[in-house]
Image (cartoon, rainbow, N blue to C red; front, side, top):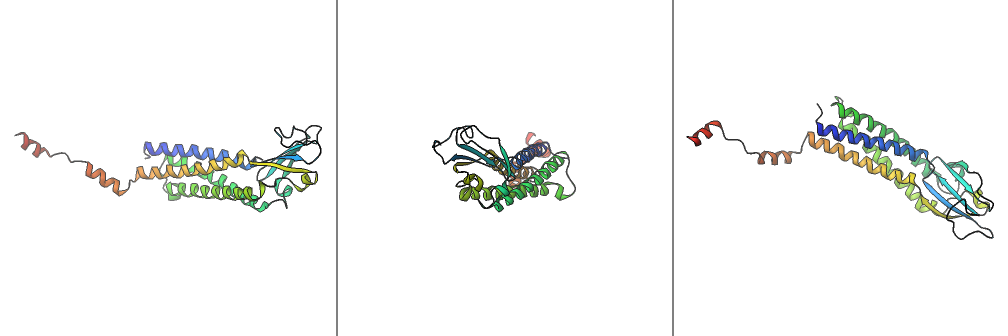
Length: 241
């Protein structure tokens, strides 16, 4: 029988895992890990842009770990948006192997978020017989998810700090006289940071269920010391008479 307080914590952890799954799929499949504003090196081009690619001689490039979008304005209005594959577009521009590593760990995050969700629901309804299906399994699934998220976050942050923030345009765009004006981290990357935090929250929730089911010995000693035994019936009668 699952205690009510433990069940509540498992339900909260399951909702957290569902949020992780939604955020990880959005981050994985969206082209918004980095956002680059470009300006064309030509007469009449502005020093800065506020609304790329609608501003003349500006461009906007966004990309994730799989694909991206690019759209440029040559002074006569924004052209149609084009879609590209990151590994092809940026081959030789920055180290795309880092992006591949991030992609692999994002897939791992999705897998273990599913495990965490399913087994969180199972533990909220019953006490599994197999240890791997119970609390130890939840530690494992969320631990691997947290580790994968942390690795992906660090690798992409390093790639951004060392390479992407300085150059996020393909060789073709640069040959067309476009220069990188500004690069920022997009919402898809920040979703990954939220995922890391939620995996950590899940681990704390699982540990809290362990404290409820099996309190540490020092807590039991305090409870025993604080609990004063009731006087026996004979002692009470002796006091009364």
